[in-house]
Structures are given as structure tokens and as C-alpha cells.
Length: 287
Image (cartoon, rainbow, N blue to C red; front, side, top):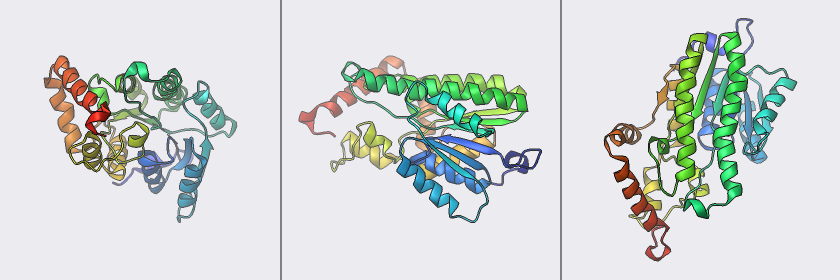
């Protein structure tokens, strides 16, 4: 899609800057490529330096003249968001586009999950996202221009047993994003929420959803129906540029969004609980 020049350049002629968290792999890496192709300077904040180096080298090797800056940081730590803000302020970098893409998931019985991982999950998915939106969103409001893309998930559409904390944090992201989108629009700041479903990235393995050779296993079906991150990122990018408040990529995910609103929550809980209990039972070899 053609990007309007005022979205790429500031009134003084300088390039606008997009800050993308979790830009080292998957959807985040594809978003980095898209923003670079559109003409933005980039600040990419992520955990693994090797991945950051790879995407920086790739983009620097292209014929564009944009700046690509990387910042290695664990965004699941309590001070991470403020450190990102400080990193930008020290270098006098004004963020025009904020993409809160970093996140991870946890599956399994809630009471079996470690407190440390739960704290990291909630910090990354909720606290870091909120603080970055507040810090950079306030500057966008003052300047009368800005865009924010928060990445939620289709898990936010309903409560999910065995995904309890993860689904709840993504529900927060969804609700929070829709609310601030209404607040910020009068100030010229567009806020969108992207709802990826199952996507073919290493997120699945991190969450414990490993590929299986058994066709009817949960793991096998999840990997089979997973969307390509390139397509998800493209839909998210274009939706943000068009000012869409809710961006749901893919036909299956759209069907999920509308269909789930017709189903009683009690039935959803019962079905998901049954499926996940079978998946978690090693005697059934469903992984």
C-alpha cells in the first residue's frame, strides 16, 4: 500500500521513527521490514542480541537511507519500559510510531506455573506495554501526531483454562488499547490493536505447543493451521496505517471473533478444559 508522505516525514523534513519491541523474530521482525520499506527510521528493542544484529545487518544492507538502531533489553523486568524511554531520551530520539509486539505465553495448570515466570509474563504483557504507551503517547499527543500498535491475541476473546494468565493479560491489552484509542484520536494519535491467532513462530514452542507427527494431536493441528508471520505483519501494518481500531488477520480468526460472541462462556470453558486436559495427559500422547 502507498504510505502518505506526512506519515513518513515530520513537518521539518526529518524522517519519523518507529519503535518496535520484540523485533528480533516472527511478527516483530516482519514489522521491522515493513516500516523500513515504508521509509521510517527504526529503534528495535528485544532480548536476543544475535537476532537484533541479524535484522540490523539485513536492513542496513538495503539501498535505503534510514537509520536502524537496536537496543538489547529484557522487557519482562520491572524497570524495562523506563529504560527504553531513557534510551530514547538520552539520544534525543522522538518516537512517532510505537509497536508493542514483545510478549510470551504460558500454558499448563496455573498453580503449576512458577511465580517468577508469571511475574515476567505480567510485566512484559501488561506493565511494559502500559508504561510505553503512557510515556510515548503523551509526547505524541503534544505533537499532534502519532501511531500506536499493540499486539494482543485471539486468546483475549475468551477466558482460557490452561492459558489463564496469558489470555487474561492479552484481554487487558485489548481492553486497554480500545479505551486509549478513543481518548487519543481527537489529538491526532491513531491507536490500533492487532489480534494474531496461531502464528508460525518460535512462540509456539516457548508456550509448550510443540509440533507432533500425530495428525490429530493438538500440537499437530495448531502448527498446521498457524498463519505465516509475514501475512500477519502485513495485515497489522496496513490496518494501522488505515487507522483501524481492531485488526483481526485471517478468515479463521475473524470467524473466531464473531462466533465466540454467540457461545456461552460456560460452554467455552468446558470444551477448552476438556481439550487441554487431554493434551496435557502424557498417557494419551497428544503432544
